[in-house]
Length: 371
Image (cartoon, rainbow, N blue to C red):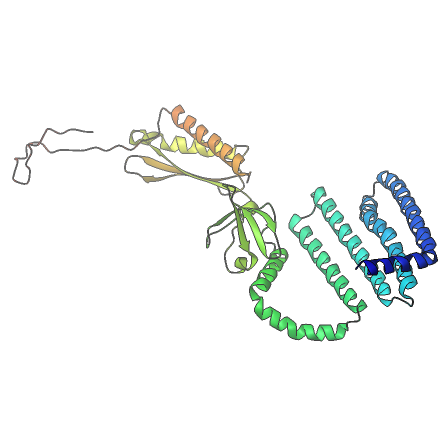
């Protein structure tokens, strides 16, 4: 082993003068090129920040690291080629392939960075649908990654026509083996295209115990955060077989309440109903353009019932309950203003007087009483 190491050291020392000067020059040139690029990039960043056009900032940020990597890796492959040629002689063909792969990977890397920067910028503006923007970004990422992989395969000498032909047969086999994965993938695509819900929506399904806020729509599954803060991971294929309700897209929220008055307040029912209806028609948070009903409904066991059926302008859950509370308190004020009151469950028991006890009446009958 020691003899082999000594032979390698002797061979390197003997041929070192042939390529050392070239490698040193390339390394120094790479360093100065990298410094020049960083200075140029910083100057361009200053100019770009002064403009109202934001896409130049995104472009410069996407270019920064890939260009710096190329400025070091490309001369590195050239230096490696000189060293190997000096040691072994002849042309090293695989280094040419390595350079092509470097260019392809750098271009794909730059493209993915640009897509990510664009996605973040568009989402920050909050002028576009978040789900649609994420879907388009994912499609572009997948497209460029596939194109980059195919180009690298072609660089290695693989025939794309043969690869595509094999892909037709292999795709059938893979499709049968991974049908669940593919069904989830196409289920996610249908969510993006049909848009029954988007990130941030409150959804629920009467078919399944699914209810919560959509956190993320992925290629395979959708993450839903329930109201007790537990995550639910739902495969996308499930949404093609169930009914999904999206309360976030409702236009109004409904108030549907029944209020009972005492039977002794029957003569005041009409006035109370009319005044409650007028109050709702003039309420600033009630949408009077929607259905608005206030009517005496039925004779209850211990109350005269009238119902309120109306819609609020807000769809926010917290604000809705605040409006509903205000409406009910005002209804109570109207009832009290007419010297009436809300009924509570009562029961009247009548006992007949003077009926002789029998074997079926083991206890004597007391005088008529009312409870």
